[in-house]
Amino acid sequence: MARHQPGDSRAGLRRQLARQPLRPQLDGGARAVLLDNFSPRQTAEAVARQMGIQRVFAEVLPEQKADYVKQLQQEGKFVAMVGDGVNDAPALARADIGIAIGAGTDVAIETAEVVLMRSDPSDVLRAIDLSKATVTKMRQNLFWASFYNVLAIPVAAGVLYPRFGIMLHPEWSALLMSASSFIVATNAVLLKTAERHMRETTPSSPGRSA
Image (cartoon, rainbow, N blue to C red; front, side):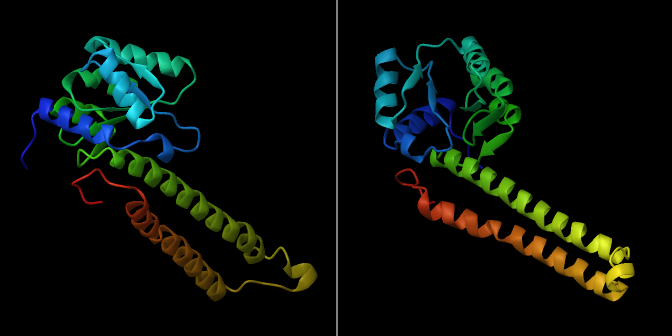
């Protein structure tokens, strides 16, 4: 697969970001911060205004990026760092979650926990939404599995038999276990629906398909 030069990737990503405001798409208390060592302060602030970002760290030296990530963490923030260059690697490693751009350098990709396959800023939002949807499905499946066990195990153990004469026969236990597994598996498959919905509702950068 052909790889873009870091400079080309960064410039192209900047153009996409400038055309695509992020603030209206962030929810749950999430806030975007622009950390820039590529442009003068005035340029960085102009791009931030177009994107709807209120907090900007401009004219940052490459070795200072990790320090700014640490500063945000000390403010009680859970920090997800998005980067594509060699000098982003320490900040990606320092952040709670490092997200590398697919067209970035190998060092950034190897350091990050999440790698975006395209240089599409909207994929960051999709990754966040998909992560939330995955956690929701995990909680739902844990609820259904626990609900089954809490109800079925005491009945199968004969707790209700002395007083009510209710006993869960082995064949019914096996059937209920299969039904529980089917519900959990079906609910997990429905994650595909959430992914499809995100592709339809999250706008892509100009010139790219969702």
